[in-house]
Image 1 (cartoon, helix red, strand yellow):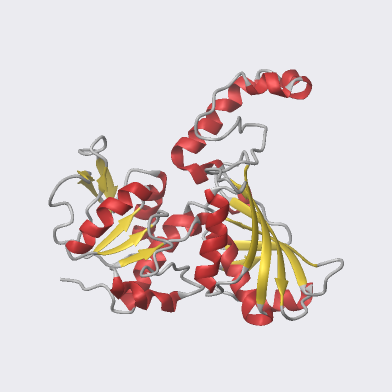
Image 2 (tube, one colour):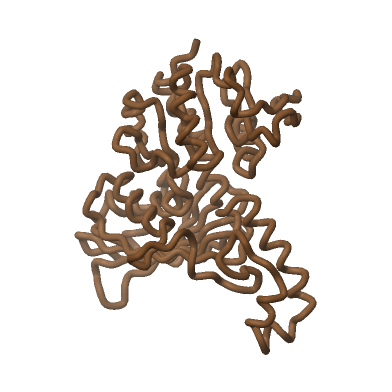
Length: 342
């Protein structure tokens, strides 16, 4: 497990234990700074090993990576060369044509492609949340495109994103009048480095690296990954990604267009019972933080176009958006005989 000491790594360890994933031993791996720390797994402590150790992948059958794109680009091929199969949670391999990009409930058959490069990619947490309802609706009505406005939690930037939000709250709470009368002055009372602007008591409509066309890399992920996962290369996607002062849990307001007419009643029928997804009148990120399922609500036919459906979907970005899907992919790889144990 690479990135074992991070926010997603903690959830990976917990889920592997909770779901009783079969393994004889575990190797917990992190940066040299964290090497030597002791972490618990299945009732005993394990010493964290440095990723740079030359033998760190020796004897490993399965490597779960959650340590950032540059780390995965460099070390995932080393793990494969040592004989491991890699499930990667970064953006490094998602758009590689030889690497399957998989949501466990949506396109599990794509895992068979893992033989090409030995790596499976986990989608971006925002894409992941939207894919479950969109897959169910696509199968029923034929998806042509969607507009997505994502409201993404501070935890999407990892532990440092959550820490920055928490650090901003106390100074601003001490100046409630300033928050009302001079917000710009209030924002200057705190520092921000992870998010593009002060996040506490605010929303930040710039998330990711801005490109010349005005879209960010986070927004481009939603376009490109959706097309790949759903095998719809011409899918029309209009994304806007916004950071909101929520600790954990992404939410997306979706306006989806279909080939066939759709209304709230038949949309609900098509989504009921879809694995990993539940329906709720008005789900919130806080209400679904710490829960495995994606929740869909505010399901409405469009006021003017009978081929359009509007809905709101939320999901825990550290669970289904990251750690849970990683573990589910590992379970599927094992069940399909794709992990060559020694």
